[in-house]
Image (cartoon, rainbow, N blue to C red; front, side, top):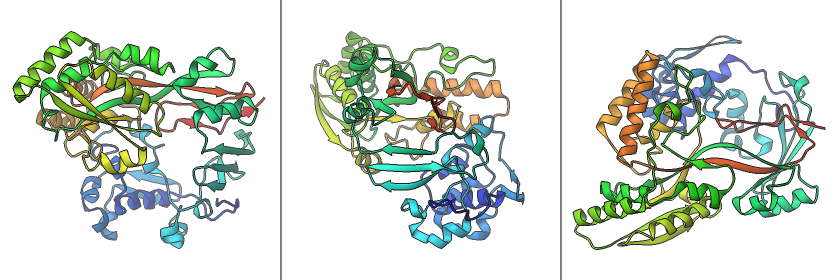
Length: 446
């Protein structure tokens, strides 16, 4: 369906084949999800390496075929226990070839050049201001969709959104930590698991951060309980490792973090100073200067950066610079180019398996922005991809995380909670911490 509600074609298995081949051909940022770091589809890694140079005949070797209009056959290199949970991720969406090629470079550049087969159709979009959707009458489960229209106000900051909610102009408004105390006792206040792990990424190209004891000191200096309870106040909880709580369960049904049992993020300022002094001695320095990069337009990021600065400032011999930018510059420019010492960043789960986080520590991963590298870790993760015994695979993942955390490859901070104002008239809004955060298809206004 296009923005006018016109049917431009019927969804078939061929649209999945075309969509999956296209993300590889275009060297899409998430093309790696089709390869051994994700779905492990046959020949995907080789094709991803070729990217834009892959020919049509080569793309046809990708392990995905349309047996008929309604049967998609996917061939994997190895067993992937979480394969089904990957499928809702955007990299696996279908694309209608005839429409995509007709629009060319303008495809999806605005709402008039976009089609979908979801519960809603986009009928209006003003960049950074608003987006409008209407119910898709041709949706496969249209009878379950009760909302006839949705309007998203995109340009409001949290304070303005809350004010608009109070005035009755919004039915839902996300809150920042600074607004929690004002609204926490109201019936419309709600909290939920956001699904994102927030962490600090040390740049291993920095001569000081290469030092193990400097990284250890930074981690030990952060009081994560205080950060969550007194600064964020939105249901966020201390991160105990690089894989968040409530992501997935072991083969025996135990949550990953409970199964691991180890806490990799303790707070001890005395130990932090001792480690920092040892690092300075090894470096032959009396003091060092580091910078903290953060985005000012990202929820919680400024608060986290300022709090990290206050913790690190207690380390004698450490001087700090704060580098403020916007998310787009942080994610698309400075981090990929390695233009940071420490960056305040986050990751949301693409699927319900520890590898959605553990992959980020592998040598060569696009999002391993700090360039930490460990041969034993890489070998373990390679074994994880090939292991067919789910119990052995689970133990290998736990061992891999242990290696990364004990070397302070990343410095986990907290598992993000979310706070929002939601009208009491809104029923059945589904929020999930994995992959697609909100589902509006079943919302009813009572």
